[in-house]
Length: 291
Ligand SMILES: C[S@@+](CC[C@H](N)C(=O)[O-])C[C@H]1O[C@@H](n2cnc3c(N)ncnc32)[C@H](O)[C@@H]1O
Image 1 (cartoon, rainbow, N blue to C red):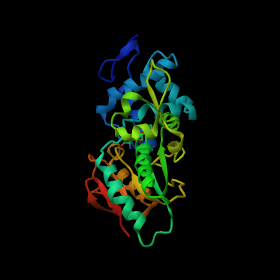
Image 2: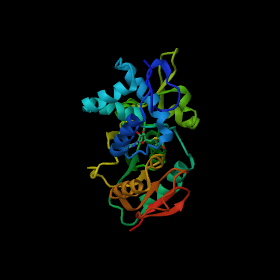
Image 3: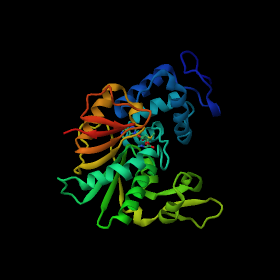
Image 4: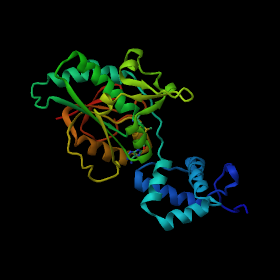
């Protein structure tokens, strides 16, 4: 039976009956409240297609049934499924490559030569790390630096809300086509090829994997419960999903864990200029912590 009345426009595949407008509004409110992610009406088709996969797994006949199921059950397990489905996790190795060149040639040397430096270990946080390509790229750059600067030590933290991408990141296994942006000379050092010829996969070498740890963190939490103070934060391609007020609150919370003089990278498509945050712009989407 097809749903009539106020339903979301757009095609629904596999005969699953579409979500009502009220149903979409309910999910949208929940997602924005939990994750900060904006959910304008233009996202209806996207939300619908992502929820459909889950509704199919549960063998439910319509998205409105899934809506009832989700809000009645509202258990931690179903919440996790929804979060995994609703986050956009697009990422790449060496994405916006200029940032990694800046990290290597400017940020690391200036941080390590700072007069007041006490810590011998450089700490970097990839906030919103998705499936790990960004933190492993950072680790490759830092590892290259350490190979010509004996005594240099580093650790990278990757955090994300999605348990699905965190599991992928911890495993550190990627399709061979994804490693293309990694400079050739680094591939041999930091990647191992799988023996399976039918599905060419590459794995980050154990020596690099052990430098990178992963934790779940929701930027909407009041307190991030992170003890470390970082020298560098990468917070790229996450802000775009939040409204201005949320962006400002989240960047301020992240800055609590960034040392004065520490570097903060946003994405080229993001600007912090409208936000009241303790960062000054020093390059294209590159900022430094004031104080
Ligand atoms: C597009 S990816 C960016 C990955 C990487 N930083 C990059 O630039 O390639 C955005 C990531 O932010 C995460 N994210 C979205 N909302 C979040 C929240 N409220 N708390 C923590 N992570 C969140 C998503 O799960 C997703 O993996």
